[in-house]
Length: 379
Ligand SMILES: [Zn+2]
Image (cartoon, rainbow, N blue to C red; front, side):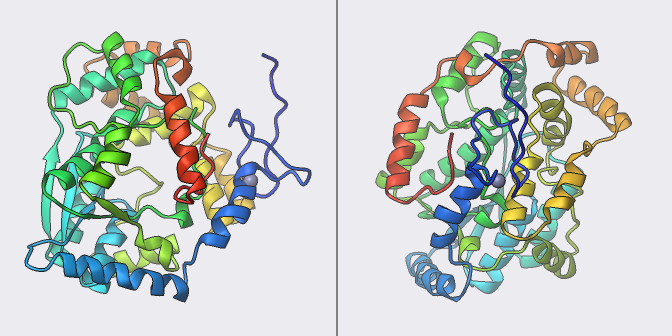
């Protein structure tokens, strides 16, 4: 395969480190075109959105009458999930049960932020702790598989535990802080593979894992998209898409109201994620997830392209922190620092090197896009 000539979008900062990116004659990438053509015209973070959301909130309240809780919210301690927790209780007047999953990698700051939200709003918190031996086994299996998306085991646990809990306890509504405003650029599958492709996860675990996953939370994409949605009737509501959502304002509100503390960088509520997104992924694969975060903020006018280019030019973690984190992560995963570096320097692989359900998932995604449910570029 011939090396592609480097190109960066002239409107956002996505570039040819996304192997499938295409540019139009203006030099704008397909994420930008997708945003202006498909997302923006259908997105109403304004009065129209408020009018659309109001009856949904009303229905949640009605359906939850006589119950202790009318909806479920997963909280990580990050901005989006903290802010939606605040809105649900104080602005919408809902009775949420707050769900937190502990994968073993919580930063002290995230734990403190979760507690501040729970205490400040007098909410009920349900915490599930993933069996650490299984978590570790799956993470080490992924490291050995050499695929880029090393955060899949954590994301799978967080996502599946929430949905499994909702279905098991008859919650009809999951409210999430997912939003277009800060996440309209998803990035390609090479960077973030489908976490619910259990055929893929099982293949990697079978080849490189050492202990059976007995209690590890999983939810196959078909169970999630079909069984939970249509049989159990679990609906996912994303209220932040129906109102103006400016990240910096949300942070300031949380700080003032709850003494919430800001993170230096997105997704640094998990120490593994900080290590993996801050060093492993950009240095080993050349994939810098900040490109998708910053590009989303550029498109929604919360950051300038110049500022993004300046920030992306250097890593978020300095040399000393990186070497400390190699020690911390290796020790926690029962590897030696040398073994972890050896894995870091090992041959790179992709999702194509392992069994997967991509053909079926692509078909399903095309159906969702035709129905207008999924509007972001997925490839
Ligand atoms: Zn672009």
